[in-house]
Length: 337
Image (cartoon, rainbow, N blue to C red; front, side, top):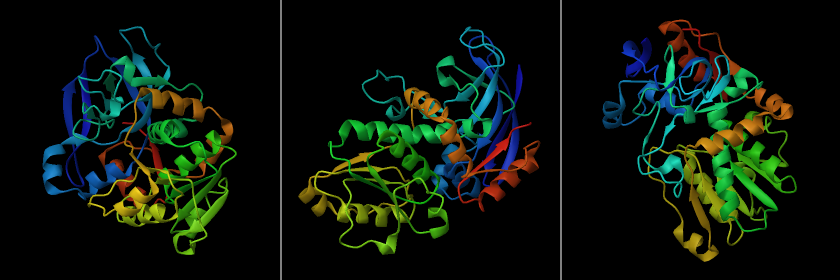
């Protein structure tokens, strides 16, 4: 079967590639809704190192998407079932000891074609049913699964005391992580620290909200999550080391293109645990789908989702990335190509 793949060949340049897809052993999915990630934007805008762009491109963007099964020769899914697609490709040496997202196999929309295709063919273990979840919410399941992965690792490593948990960042990632933590630890005080007062107002479910410059020496946390990324990573990590209690756990989630200096002296003196978390695997997707079944959570997430007009051609793809530049949180769109 001939398929259309919409590839980024250079920053802000999209071209169509034609390819044959495997209908004999892989599940064929029609994408329905997609969401834009900061990583997609960095590729589209050309804000990665030139050597990286040269290595990764051309490729189709987008790794957050849901769709409908059209054909499954394995019998795992029925035609018409709603599924979310897992972009992570486990490495050949994946044996369960190391999480699949750290085995170096690959990732769709990072050197491999993402979901901007007419049809997507995947192995059945790269799909998870999502049932009746709002499609706009289902489209960001991958994003939620990243938060699920971070919180599950935190649960395994953090000491028992979790009275106060701080989240540095006021964007989509901080919103998701804060929501998961509030659900998992209802007795804990979830404290969100950000730079934009208007964005912080979206975190009405959190227990305490602070602007970064409001923190003082009386402020303390037991554990912290860094969701700032970019240039804000250094300041967020420095704050967490300063305000965290001894033997706290710091979960690093924000991506920075530059190396970040870290105050190792205080890390050692306080006996802190630092955990690096990136991407997610099948178990995290399953946990994310379970989390998203809650209607209250769906209502909350709708407040950070902006649905732009459907994508029907290449011009619409360019429009989506332009619109996303002015969106505070998540941009989603219906894929009608």
